[in-house]
Length: 125
Length: 125
Image (tube, rainbow over all chains, first blue to last red; front, side):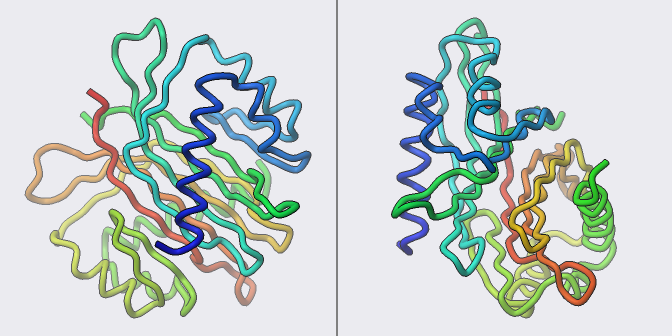
């Protein structure tokens, strides 16, 4: 498995584990120039992104990853990570499909999330 | 609407119109360093990508875009484009949901597809 694929896999495991236990801990994974577009609502910077995630209308949430794809995104070590999966939210009996795309960029020997786009995917028919 | 959003919108319209009428015409949108991961199968370069698209097991296909998100992907004018939508294939009565992520990079006054990741998204339950 190529290095970027290992990194993508480790990132995705860590990201959703953190998200599902304590969303505010994700602050460490973003930067001031990070962008999040969550269901078409855009925000930028650690503070805005964490506020957006905290404001989501659920307390308990569980992400189940179905597919994970990764590709190098530039010559400087950036990695594109695309996840499809299922979201289980406390009040909802019915799980929802989602798709999330990240671009990870190198930062101080590790990586941070530069791009983050989340969308629910509704059944086609 | 920001410039990158207009470009993303125009690209997506053109891409699927070309895909649904003549897949081989998409060659103009890729480069030698372009990567496609189609349902987990990776390939690189114009020739391999077009061969992969030609080999897909359907003749008639129609993409219907449900959502389109875009973000700048770097300081050099790159654009991340994320589409969710519905795929209608000739023999299939049942439409399929999909998610596709592109990274567009500037090339000679226009753009080309550097990253391309396609996944079908199955209903959650």
